[in-house]
Image 1 (cartoon, rainbow, N blue to C red):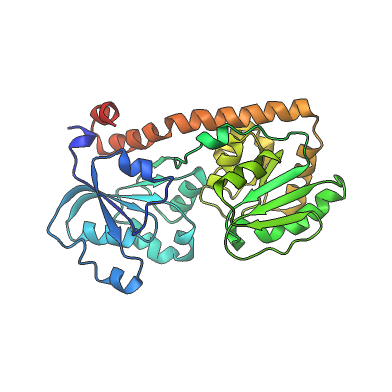
Image 2 (image 1 turned 180 degrees about the vertical axis):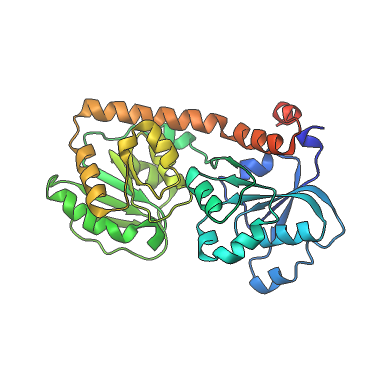
Length: 324
């Protein structure tokens, strides 16, 4: 049996999946089941009680997992897979552990997420498959490696460590006086201060322009399941500095392990100072390596997803690659 012969249901919240997960869904011959955003409608899941049965249900994210669990319990699917996408699991550990008992295998979006799931007692099969963002526009960027500008892109959320940026840049500027950080993203606002420029949400074209003005990218996350903005910045040739609690550290380590630092303001500031103080030749080496790592990863990640599923289900994925 081939992977393309299986009856697969892909479960995601209405409006989804995330753009970087959509290639996974599109690579499979599957039926997408959209789960209502309204919690009350989600409690009465008539949208899955149609009598259809599947060989595999894939729950994309924590919100979709209870529906996948219900399908498995109601014998509507033979196998249940779970794609980890956030730290929500850790907020409800007992509930998560009970749901995971009916999960046959996990697709972790980073080694960080695989550790989280193992920590909840999951002892069955797991594969690591990174998300698949569209990076073509970012590869065209030539960063300003002489610049002392740093960039952060993401929602203004506590877990992303945005509130740490003013303190970090203040410490950096004691050594590198012209250092500046661009803070880009939707949500709440961070107050501008010396060395901090807050842009809020901006169009894609302006994002590309601002990235081209920078030499480094900083992601001081307290917990980030992956961090697509990190790899977008790497594709643009910016030198990334991320915390150990950032899932995309798996790729940053391939550029230079020293660019992954503890979640500590002193450690983060020291590494940024080190990067900004490098001569242009050193920066060029890291910039080219960042682009290369991202390009190689981007080219093979879809196959990693398909092969991971096929291996766990013990079916062939050959037809899937020849037709997608």
